[in-house]
Image (cartoon, rainbow, N blue to C red; front, side):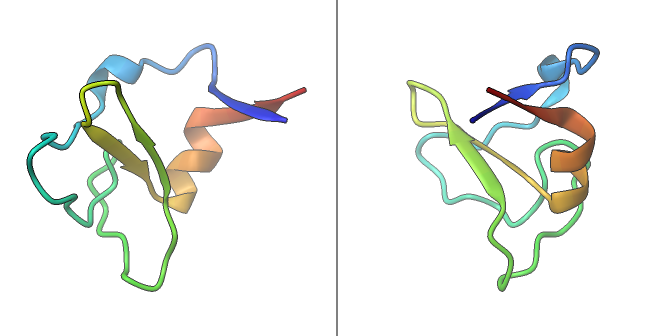
Length: 66
């Protein structure tokens, strides 16, 4: 199974971390604080920048496909 952005989601509005910086504890979509005891969905691009998502944004922004 794979996750992909929902068709109507505009991923251009995401806040990416800098490749040379530590990852801030905030959702890249809604800027909500992500608690330390939570494991967020995280993705990196080929340059080493990261986006991460709180549970609510995973539900809103992604869909599972086979």
